[in-house]
Length: 382
Image 1 (cartoon, rainbow, N blue to C red):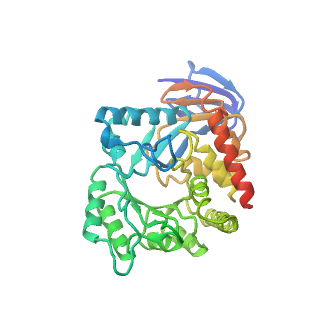
Image 2 (spheres, rainbow, N blue to C red):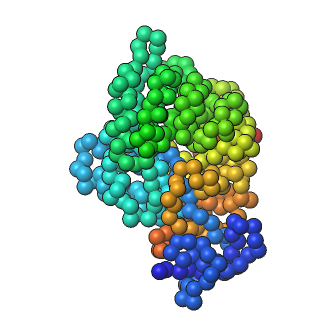
Image 3 (cartoon, rainbow, N blue to C red):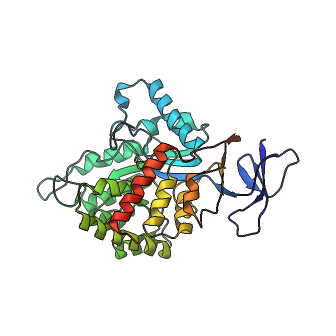
């Protein structure tokens, strides 16, 4: 058993400052006699959750992936272990990998990494990941789609990722799956014991995903107030990936369209929070390993109160990660009052190990944060 002591610490339970022990990664007010004093002051908070991660995302170019098909199984395992370890060192306690376009290597190797100190779920290979938009004359084969769903659910990662729309060369995102097929696909995944994350950016795909009872809505940049109400009624969680979508859409929309889109998104994020929708942070391969705190800052800049943005970063609703380990962070400030404190943790306790100085404000994080703030400032979100 490892135990650490933080004196005069703030915690999230609303009580006065007090001495707090971290015993085997769990926060407790019972102080073991042999607890090691590691800090005085600050705030003791849970580690963060990345609910939309791509562990196989390439660091060379956003939107590309490591070519696992050309790697040995041992090399793939080493890569996954390195990325998970980097996330753990930076205070991430749980990750949901939402897949890759090739062979679902993360889901296939998931069982081998249960001792890495980060709880993680995995969705396998994208279902319908390479499909083009459907039309009245060119419809996808539902038999093939259902076979893909069953195959990915059988990997045991807990999730299936379905791509429901794609951008074409010009115009808004178009559906890649018929809504009635999507309903059957999600029913099939649920029957196999898997939950379903649906990539849906545009309004038609969002509407189809919600009508099909998706467990989580990925992106959902163009949701409407009616969609928010639908999410609240049926318990669909929302992972808006604000950083990723700003970068993705900036090359597809005019400045005026960006302002309108993200002004509406800011309004709908606030509405979703007020309605009780679980909103979650996700890096989507656009942030350095462990830097999902930047997404929490983005949510705050884009309309959520800091307390709500923090809840999204720790998955207070347990909408995705239900078997969280007890990784803990010590920050200078209360993140509910200054969300940017997540970017500079003082200490991290992970798997019984004391880690310092964690992320800090390294050059990579500073660059990502500077670009985010520039985007947020120019789009005029409020």
